[in-house]
Length: 167
Image (tube, rainbow, N blue to C red; front, side, top):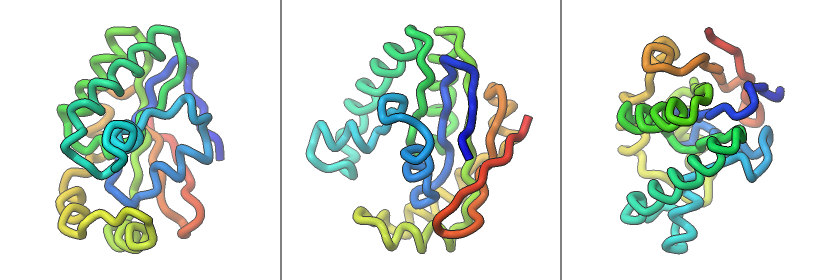
């Protein structure tokens, strides 16, 4: 299923590691629409997992986000977006450029994320998955933060994630 958003929207993917966010995004949107801290970290250090590159990656992502939103181009931010201050910063950029901001919340159980994580090339440590589980916001919380709407993605089988819109 293809999700549709108002042109120029900021679309923020929200969910723990191993939830299928990147797979979901690459199947639905052109590469030019997607901004990923992992990709920028890899460009800076040859290692997408090198967290020491996150401050630089965040600066680059913000520059690209501003470049796209200033041109009214739909932009998908592919990161966990689990920390409220990260989401607040993204919402602030959307407000600055007067663009709608939408969230895609991944409702994938910890057990499913563990299984999907184990099959990835870069495996995230289990304690990180557990810590992330406590940070996953509800759709209602995302709406209160200022997202115009939330698409709730539930895992139905390992190969397919089906979205449902929440307003």
